[in-house]
Length: 85
View 1 (spheres, rainbow, N blue to C red):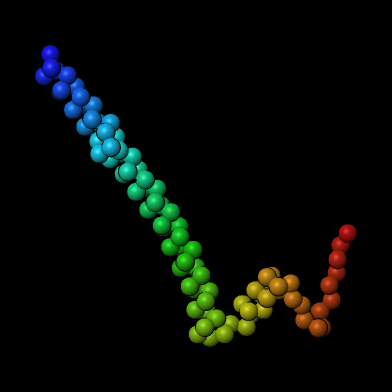
View 2 (view 1 turned 90 degrees about the vertical axis):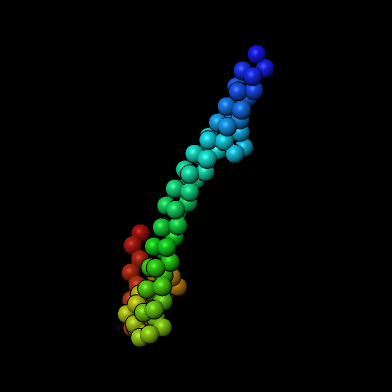
């Protein structure tokens, strides 16, 4: 009877314990999710590096003009703004 109890106990611990099979599977799923996040962050970082490399190597005046208009809301002196209501 006690041998059966020990076998059941160790089987339960092997599956549901802190270092058991269920914990291992949960950690594997977390690794998969974190790798997906890493890939998306690497893409964002690559896009930002491409934009900054354009600004650092050859100053792309069109890109600078476009970004200043979008981000800062700047216009040139010879432009007219039409506001629709």
